[in-house]
Image 1: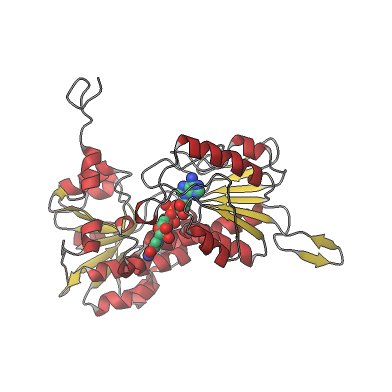
Image 2 (image 1 turned 30 degrees about the horizontal axis):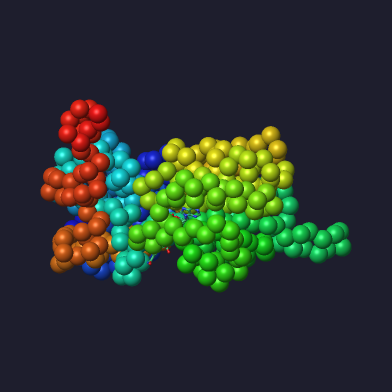
Length: 389
Ligand code: NAD
């Protein structure tokens, strides 16, 4: 079986799906690894490092023509899908629910699409395949470093002959994987850290890392399915925003990471709250996307400075800003998933297996993921039974 490592083509994407260190396990399983010329360039990994680890470097056309399985970070583009062939498989963070038509195109070409973001995250055996977590970890770490770098003062308490610097007050909103890493990183930099989440179980996790959990007077328990949060009701949202406004005003740095699966991210920092912040304060909105973010004023991919001197940063791909580190973890995730699907040197999909069942989106010319199929169903016509009146 030939496994190909594609060069990423999304703008700003510097990660690569496999690093040379990860090749050994694949070659030991009888897999021949092809690497697209310059696939590692964004992570400063030269072709020669892959060659030394046992891979063959090939031009793009050969990679797409010869590989049985193509490994990548992001979803292939329409032109890449157009050169893929029946029976081939592609594995990556494909975001099938964000672009169901790309999944339909893959199914039409007979390509098996396997998406790492569909892994059942609470399954302990799947932890080493959990690329959402490994990449969110990088994001939480980098968000704090970017905030500290932008902040015009020291983050730690510092007593010197020239005076004393007070430690920065940092607030982390959303205590999932990224939030926990952000708490740990801000604490290591010496900040005084507060954190808040709508899942009460996160309190102990935040406290164990040295953060103070923010308790709102309005008790909200928004624990949803699979360890995720549910969307808040309008009343809960209003109460939360009003109380958070009080806390946010006193902060030097706020990092937001709150997401609700399949929904627009909740607004946690309103324009009003930003207006109460001191000049020089910094916000990093990790949830920002074209759909909106946790900070009302943030603009995905941009940095803005408000009239009252608050910097709002909405980075779009934090893991890509630390490409070698992110790729090393991602390579472990993707190779563990792949090796779990290989029998006797060939891809063998056992749909009884929980990981396979969850991650295979298209196979044998059809879309096997029910959630993707639902998104592609035509909306009921007006006047039709079940349609709009
Ligand atoms: P996520 O990116 O979906 O959301 C980040 C955080 O935002 C979550 O903690 C969520 O509760 C919080 N949030 C949502 N709405 C909010 C609001 N209105 N106000 C404040 N906070 C809000 O989460 P994630 O980092 O992907 O993690 C999701 C869950 O998956 C967590 O429970 C995590 O522990 C779990 N997880 C489990 C495993 C495992 O068991 N192996 C692995 C990875 C993640």
